[in-house]
Length: 253
Image 1 (tube, one colour):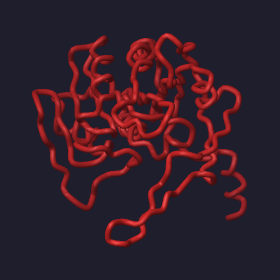
Image 2: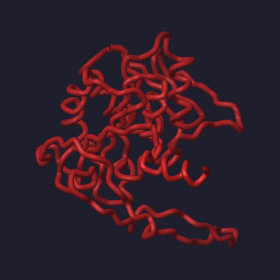
Image 3: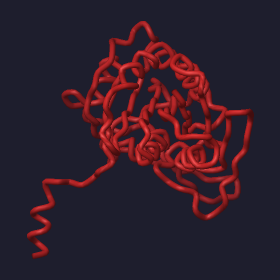
């Protein structure tokens, strides 16, 4: 099985090392193509206003001067000798739950894989407090990563779908198990924007990660993580709201 690994935290991120260790439990045919620098919050963006540069670090390890989407495209079109059987994105430093998947570079890399018709899975490690940097513990992902992936390797994936996995912020032996759940909902109206002044006297604004309310409902990814479970959520790329089609069609005659 040929596997392509990528992420949005950068080629030297600790979570990518964790992901490689997980992937090698299933295959030795591992390729890596990831952003050269952190691209958190990049979403499903492409680099169009400047050239993307590809750097080779060893035989099967590459980085790109762009986004996670760029990395997957370059991995598929320029790096790998043939298409992979599986694309794994992560392990992200931080949660990708609820509506966050629309901002997530980690999930977007898996989206690009799904668009290419390749089985794609995003993996993220939740952590308990801000400001931890590279000190975020990946113990839950390390211990539970292979347990989550194994049943997914031969599971049927519908076209243009992917799977989003989140590991709770717990020591591995305190994780309660695995739940397959739907996507939850965040209330971003309560998010924070931190204002400051730079050394030259100009105002700046920094989007805060704290203070975002969430509404865990029955069987959502937010509830699963809150209860100490690994969350597994199938996502689809078709965003059409089917229930509105007939009404809107009627309004336009």
